[in-house]
Image (cartoon, rainbow, N blue to C red; front, side, top):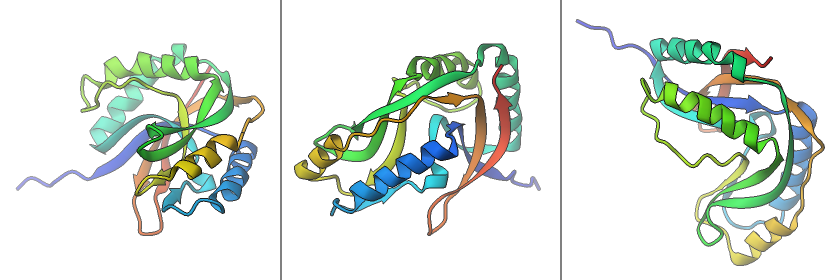
Length: 190
């Protein structure tokens, strides 16, 4: 009898410095007081830039992901990021995700995605996307009203420049109290 290999829910992300997370979190706390729609706001400690969501993978796939990234480390260089402005997926009329845009550093994030996608797609079921660098801050269960969309868009958040210097492969465990993210591997930039 074959033993079923344990699988884990995973994603590859750029972590965000604590002071920037605090600034984003205080902005979220302020605007969330005025939003009546049901929105699950991202906890401060869980704020990050997702580069790839892999879903359920096994330990062999974790090792292959690690191998691919190590092969590409020469492409991974430190860069600066600045956040600015709010937007929504899929759009303002049917809001499911509330996110903050990347004013500086987005091209570098796209380069990371572009360099790794062809390699990962050889052994993982990931779909090619028009990668949009963004920081998810909330998920709206039933959308938002027009006035709530306007309120969020008018709430201007700009961060100072901050440095990106690593990628982290996270495991995500879903719990009734929200997801718990555990770093599995860290890849430092040159």
